[in-house]
Image (cartoon, rainbow, N blue to C red):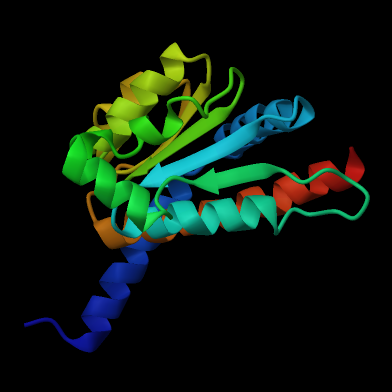
Length: 191
């Protein structure tokens, strides 16, 4: 049985390893994608399951509210994980794998950015939505763990962590949320 010290130490080491995998280049390339969409009045759409669903909500809030600059238009961001009535009706009436894709139908504009957040990179409902988004002319981004899974090969740009620990991956995705919020607010302020 591990001691509390070992558990804490091991967890922090794993989290540190994830943070070391993040590159400034990957972050700035995704910031540029979002800023191009912002300049054209396009929206940023987030989605994920479980802990990644709460990260999608957190991202949408921070990107739309946390980047607000007086006198400038706001970034338009939404999370597809937020409407329980829509999600449960789609899961019940169509299929759980359609819960994100069906929310994009009729709502997605060419040039919008669709961001899938998945620890495993293999969530079928995220994969289906990303495929739809690409065909609809959206730019697709993945925040992924576990080495990338299937999602890595479907998106235009991704940040991939090698960790197979859900906690480490989800924690790192929240760190990315706050980094993106800071960088985007700076660009909006200066732009």
